[in-house]
Length: 399
Image (cartoon, rainbow, N blue to C red; front, side, top):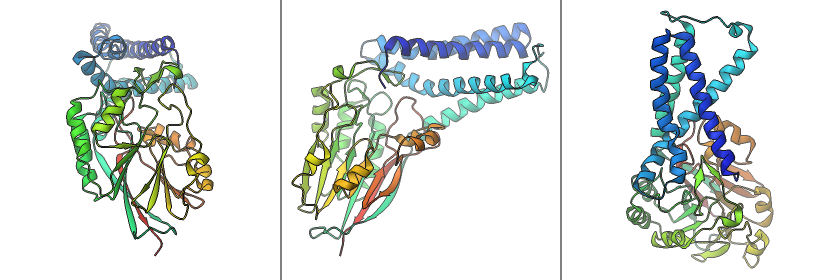
């Protein structure tokens, strides 16, 4: 999402000020004055240190300090989102209830229900987010079975390992990628397909990039590793997940191209490959950001021209858009990422209204769509109500 950096910064600071102010009011209403002042000062001090990390990192040059601040800030970001949401919801409900409109000051006493409730909310949010931060690094493997009436060109079956949304950068580095590669290699893949967002808008932010490239080169498959670009595979500084550059200024840069080559991946940018004289893979540029300052890409019709549709056609695309158009054009299997399955509650529920296939398997006409939840994270370094996953797609050809 593209928006003025001024409005992003103003909104972020205003939202954090609101959280701090509501916390102070709550403490002063429910604790003795001196105790409330002391806890308010301590809470505000600690909270401010974390809250200011993201604005500070946005203006710092690349380096160790910026990396450290952003890694901490991405963890804090999730806590902030939930605290802000909790205060908005609670205040909204309070305004609807006359019982909560009472203005008399509550004194601190044992069993004070508001104090207990408020403490439970804070504790619950922090505990949930810490669990979510840990869960984000836990990769699951999901299996999908697909039947096709297409000729396999001598093949009975094809095992595709689909990964996406690595988001290499400040949150995802060498350790998490090594774990991913170990799980990928355990799947005995015929081919590995990477559905975009290899980077999180940066190469400089990657922890131990040479180790990451070495791990990626170690991915094993009989027919190779192919990839397409995603909307985050451009060099750009984001603020709180928002792009503050104009589209024409969002460029990929040679460092990302080189990183992919040195990682052993074959990039398909609006290109078609016939693999093993058996099936086609169409790798598409990203719908939102082609990486050259435009959103231009070849049409599906252009890419399908000359394809022998008696063979299986796999479309590898970052965003799961236009499923019906792909099915009508003759695509048999469409493999995507991008959605993260919402990544954390309640977005994991809301996302079902935004995408025809937010995650998992869906049949559209004669085509099968598979969308992986992805390996990495975007924005808050946590997953709540969703799993990071590797998708194994077993395709059975006609006998």
